[in-house]
Length: 171
Image (cartoon, rainbow, N blue to C red; front, top):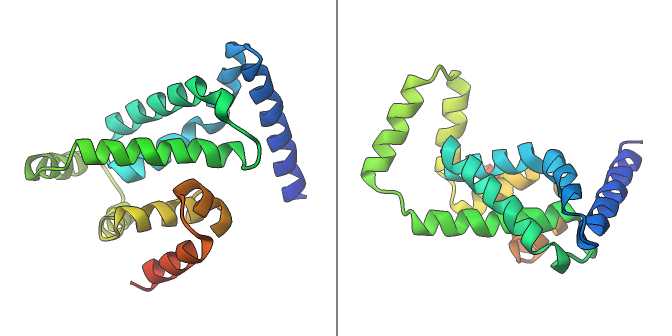
């Protein structure tokens, strides 16, 4: 029954995509509403900064709209959108290579916010992973993508994704 509901959502999204591709840019707001929270959380876990994650999510949706005519439903729309998110966040991380000063600022911001001790532990554990392993873990655990979908998003083989996921969980 859950799979049937997911298929209906995919069909609905594909209809909205067709409307946007046909020139109805207003229809894109349905896509934003559907994926906004997921994309923001993905960006937040990668960038570790709320403002950067909010800005990144906006830019990702803009890029998605600009390139929507390139979407072909051989993969799910969400996988296509996550690929844009992955590329955008990776570019941001490369461009804004974290300095010691920004790291200290990040730690100070964490101390100012009332955060549950488990949240801090999760952040510390995620910090120990490579960017690639963190992306795999987030896509698998939070978004429930299978290895094939993650491989498509990241441009890797599914066997590589499965091995990296296994290695990440062990360490």
